[in-house]
Length: 194
Picture 1: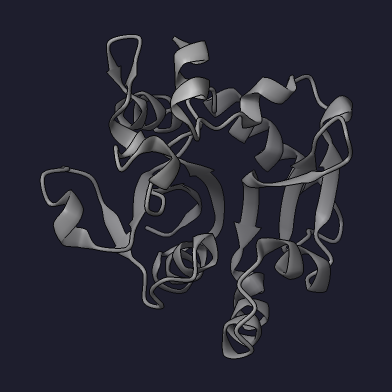
Picture 2 (picture 1 turned 90 degrees about the vertical axis):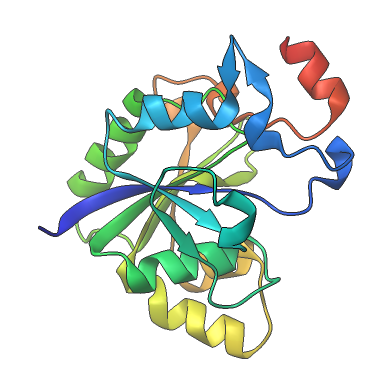
């Protein structure tokens, strides 16, 4: 059966700032970031992992979608998932966002469904007005825009949001705090989390 929405967890790049330790497997209250996020998000929708190399994650027993276009960052994962998964919309998060919640995803989904016309993408902006590409909902309507950007070697999600008339919702207009969008990139950020 086709899902209207699924959750895509981006499994990330090279983890350079974490000195090569994969952020998905950092400990968070006795379990990995990844297990914590999957457990939380699976109460909202089916969850799929976006990976650049299935072999790297062969020990994980979760559905995966492999990047069709390698080395272009989050856009590659979003593109492959929108193109190949049997759903109309994806809630996008990442394996280094331990505060992401099903409640937040439900809020974003309900908000998107209430808009007329329904946008191709809905994301938040933070207190400074800067948009956050993750923690947003991306629809299949984006595929032609993404294909055009890939063809022209533009891989920034900001460019995608600009050309697709994204709806950018200020976080101040939601019941959530900015912490929901936090991601852990460095050993220092991880230490302060613990």
